[in-house]
Length: 520
Image (cartoon, rainbow, N blue to C red; front, side, top):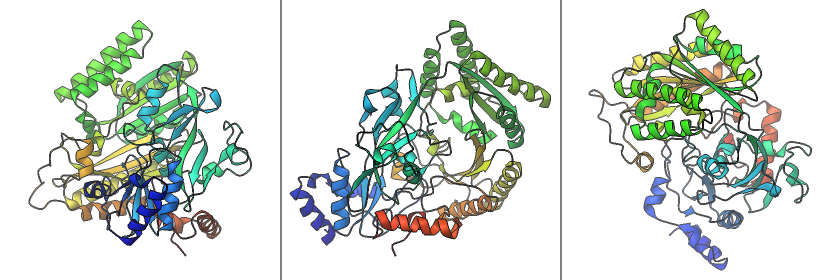
């Protein structure tokens, strides 16, 4: 046992927390990789708090013993977000911290501990008529709200009102209105400089998240759905630009032909459960009958192999009244008619509206390995970006070999003003323990051709795409250690970030090297 770990055992035994140290070799090996990347080192131990109040003691004791800390929750990172960087590093596993409660006795703000998943919060809120005022990721059955706050989401995060964090030496502090008065209401994020925003998207470099205060919103009174086949990203962007001038909320997804096919990777049972969830959400019998027809049509297409082999747009419209939703649907239908776009069944859009979480998408339809990258672009100027990224993706596929790998693209609106472009790779690579943990039915895919694609080739191709997106002015979330951040800042902002890091973690013990920050 390393000397630092022995010292940590003694320190935590005095506090009766020594049982929170897990040295199991299999668990340490599992936490040595994420969806794609493998760490150069294995963590010396896994620290597993059972209550958010234990985080401060565990972190303070570990750093005092000379151990650096990486934080892991759901483990769905694909950018090295929690992988240890040295041989004296421990992983803080917050997945057991699943407490949820209403703040201040009200029903419009919840306090969630660091390990709460999006699915668990949805279950907590079921029947209340409320939902978190943040769009959740597809992996919400496993990925956590705390992880999304630290890694960032490509959507508005203003519903994160306050945070409770722990510095490298174990000091606990709160942000938002709670930063000035522990008895204050957390409903207001203000109180001078936005300290809450400072810790959103920092990837754990500036502190360890223990709890978050999240604003809720009423479920929309009205919803409507639209789907059509399109020729490519340009048609999708035209639809978004038309909708951006109308009142109400919308979420729009654009899948390329291959990625549309990968939606079919869900088992028939999972698809049927999603369909039932959609139908049970309908209070109007006519709406339920129409939804049933749409869902059955979609399922029949998927499982008969007759789904359209085209780019497809799936649109979810939400509003406070029927008129708002009708205006958005009428606008989308009018544009589709003008451009001769084929209408599709809206079953996928209706399923997406019900937050059908799944991590099955971390592997391809035949259990191929998967690795995406992404860029966020302004809505009114991304057409050249989308075209150039798609062309680069096709060039990579031709260079590496279409028989050896697949390339796909997904586009999602991230509000009225931005769109996320996510190219991705699928290849028959060696499955990792994390894949098998969440997809136990997965089988090692057969190699493609005589020369299988290596992880190194995929990583080089990904770096090429990221460099292109950066050249085109992309922004990123889920920075991990594989998107450039620090060197893209102007000198003043870079100096400020380093000063903040020194203030909360002078020795660089939290997520070393994250955001380009290293101990000085």
